Length: 385
Image (cartoon, rainbow, N blue to C red; front, side, top):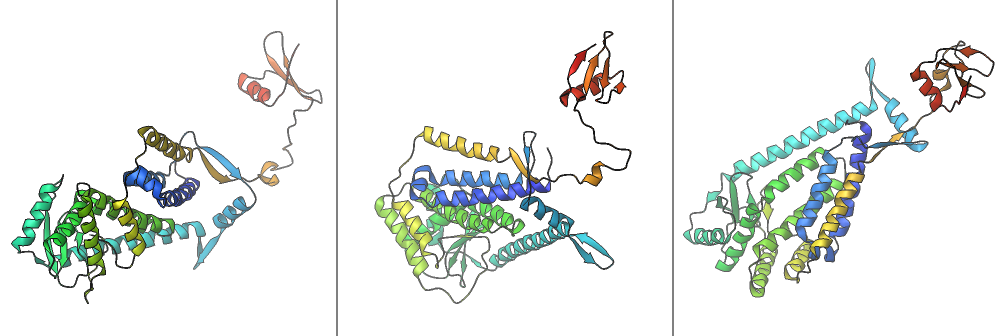
């Protein structure tokens, strides 16, 4: 097992195709309603696995391509960029740009995350017993009980949750009815129970590293929407139809309400949604109000078997350029001649030894077993003495 530039190219190719394929089936209402959000998240996990695991496995078969593919590879591989009195390969320069840009984006992302966390320390911690009672009700109804505090931020537009380790629900400085407050805290607390911020953190790092691939931004958007749908379904699983309607109306009222004049950096956060994305909101509402149409376990098992098989098959071959060796590399000097098997045969002696008889009558005695095997593989026949 090894990692080559070709295995990396195959990983980038297949992971991009997988992301596009998952996006297409995720967009189908039937698939989302029948197979559920956990299936889609599992498919994305397989996709990320295919991206990260770049190995050429023992059963991987190299497939040589000529013409455009080999010419393009040769052009990139042989290209050099002059730097002063020396030069560097173009391929190495591209890798260097990728590494520098990725390190810069990762550093910027982590710095923004830390700065946002520090700024959250400036927000006033909730001292309202009314909000605390509602939060305790939400905790009592939850299947997990992560430690979460509520903060008030006067410059915030919509409620949101931040903090990978120190969980905070941040509320705008405004009045909410008890029912609205309950649904808001229920939504944000469910995000923490689902560990959605951890998933978002890993996806953001993935996008920072593979910034050059446009498909990763589609993956980031899709996963963010799937996490919101998953949170909605979990938060409303015990609700009546009336409670689900009130939950949805609360989200609409908060998102369509007046925004504040301030701005809070929220590079890594969960929230009720985005004000400017009506299509995503409509999809979430359809999923919450739709009647589930689950498929059988056999169908789900067959689907997962197919998905895993496709991923495994993507490791079965690797595309490589194919070149014919130049003639000057074969005929290095005048003393080397091309070997032809026309008219030659192996003579099996009565004493059990073997001799090679050339077409011109020349004989080479005492051919050992290894050389004999090579000649036989070349199609030379054996004759008895």
